[in-house]
Image 1 (cartoon, helix red, strand yellow):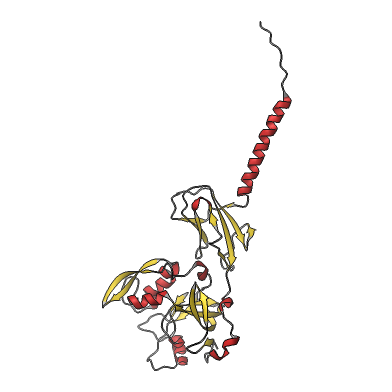
Image 2: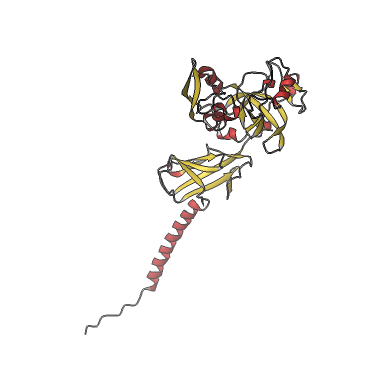
Length: 329
């Protein structure tokens, strides 16, 4: 039997090693926590233009008015995604679907993605109204039962900036029904320098054709109504559109990627009841037009009202039929 010298266990050395390992793990944990502590894993999102079937650990951090928040603002709370400040790692881009109020991630190609989302308050409609004190000569309360305040006169200085475009204020409209019976006072504006109007002039974009290219003279099924409220204009994209090409109805393409509504602009537009009543003749006064528009005289049983966000100018408002959203005042 061979005898070897007994070696005492070096507890001090083992303790130093264990302490060092714990320090390394602690530092790594702090770094990981600082990187992800403010991010909340969230599966309530849509992925667009991505290549990841299961995005896995996608994390969101919310900032409201530059203050960290546990949740994103609720729909209708007066906030919109600040796309200039918001960003995602791994080259992804966050977008806010204002209809479903979900975050959509563009160009999501890998897992373990963090998105920092900044929300800013949108300006109230009153912020768009220029000073009325200097233009009192161009303002008048109409004689309708709603007693609306309107701008009048050809050279009225009622220009405002909306949707990165120049618009004009038609007036302050009272008792506007949002479609549920709730009545509000709204600011109504109309496009001035407006690409859609140019397209309508160039391609004869007819409002009285439906989305299948059939003539039906019904605004509620009109292709123009669909384009403005659901299609290319509302979504700021391109779309197909039937137009009159020297008497031949042709399916063409309209490009509204620069003239369509921005996400911020859409938050300022709400549903409203639009009246579709007609007039028996053109020899009708403005006040008569206003009454007839809200009447029941329509062509062959067509609807008398329509609930939507973007429509055409009423005959009683006088002028070319350019899009005119109703903004909440």
